[in-house]
Length: 337
Ligand code: HPA
Ligand code: ZN
Image 1 (cartoon, protein in one colour):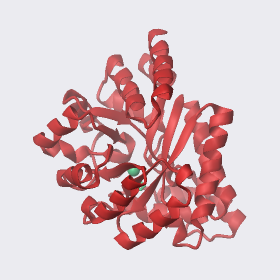
Image 2 (cartoon, helix red, strand yellow):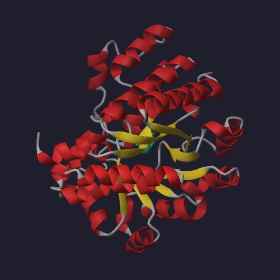
Image 3 (cartoon, helix red, strand yellow):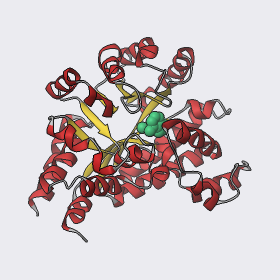
Image 4 (cartoon, helix red, strand yellow):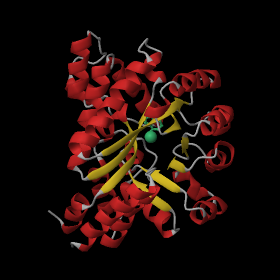
């Protein structure tokens, strides 16, 4: 193994941008389809994999929403999340904040409680049995109406103790953060942490809105922020973390070549960058695959790789005792050579 890859494998890290429905591997998708009597539009795993040729975020989302239709029971959600958490443990992930998309399920008649209880049970078991800290961030689907998001927040507040925050995902262009200003205000008033996808396909202005209109603490993706020097200076000064997803960017054609991925330029501009997998079952890799792909394409130094992993601990929503302990363990691994 290359020295760089061995370092990536060894470093503890947090994953802060993973859509749990995007960790649904084709084999599990077909198993759950059979379990639940759901008819998929693909005859087998090979045909499904051939459908993973995306030219845009929307191309991917069209497959993603069909794929998640096999998730029906609490046990399905548990199995999905626990499979991902075991895989994350193998990549030395110490702490996960996972997104989920309740509206992708409630629209099909699956109750909010079924979704959140299954996922939350997997997070609890991961903490106890795998030693991986795991928590849930509920995302609003931005292509749907604001009223729908309000109704989803009403449901979420009945499960307030199982969720650490809210996010904003799905089709970005034409659905600016400001569309969700009021529902984010309500979520913030309830003490939930606030996150949003911004600047993946949408313009730098959407990153401004995420910060100033929604009040987010962390920006998911944020690639297009680099179009605006004033915004970059703001993100650097305020140490706003960006959850960057290199293989996702490549597969959704946000970047045309990994050698031109903006991650190193972001780091050189003093942005707090983290590396994440987004939808690992669809984009060809889990978190360490993302670290390896971007480190190799951009020829990152060991110091840069360590900095990226260290950033994930300062960007995580841990309580301060937990963060101190996790960072001490991280620095010990770094010193261990
Ligand atoms: N972007 C926006 N919405 C999403 C994504 C993504 O990469 N994955 C799942 N929902
Ligand atoms: Zn995402």
